[in-house]
Image (cartoon, rainbow, N blue to C red; front, side, top):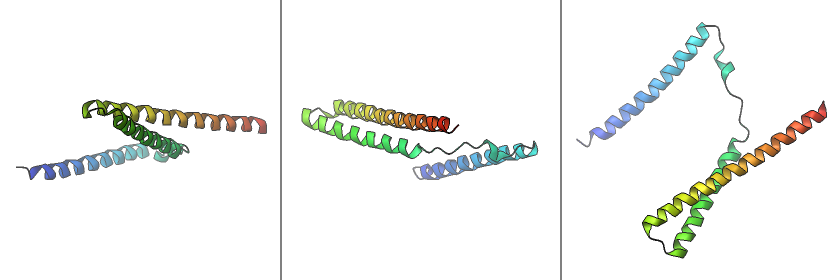
Length: 119
């Protein structure tokens, strides 16, 4: 009976991917039939995505490191240690995203000021 698990997992995964691709293609074909260019609706590039991901990962890493040192220094048992790990990872990951937002905001404000100066 346990041999059915990988077979079922592979089959449902394949069906899900196939279904998503089929529906995306059907949506694009409907747009073409109505005279709409499907490539016009694509979003603009996101220049700060790598900064955001990088700062998030640095924050998560710092959170894990701080949680490890905290658990070792205090001698907390495994159940309470999980809460320390969870809390530190969320706090430092959030701080990484906040720092990313501040950097993006400063850069966008600087771009806006330089565009006004050109006019």
